[in-house]
Length: 92
Image (tube, rainbow, N blue to C red; front, side, top):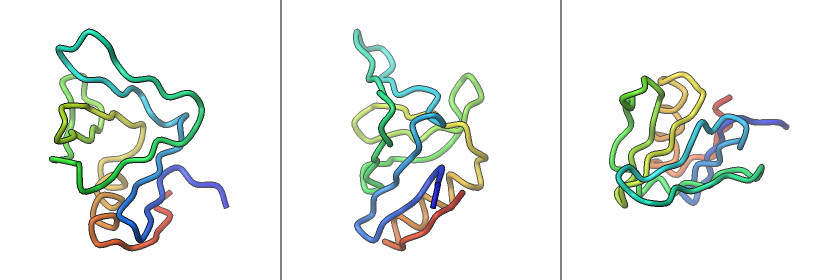
């Protein structure tokens, strides 16, 4: 089954690459790139979920990275909560 965001019982969030706007670390010389593979995020490393200065739904990571995605805030929040609860789910 195709997915946009799915979570695993290991506390991971898989985000389909075409729905990632950007992965970056503000105020750094080099950003990160997503090359067509799903982006895997450990929910334990997410500091909080909110909107960035450009208005995109963004996972703010404890290590300073920002992962902006093209999904509704409610979908990103559901994925975050399910991953923290270690529930397998396809959010969208």
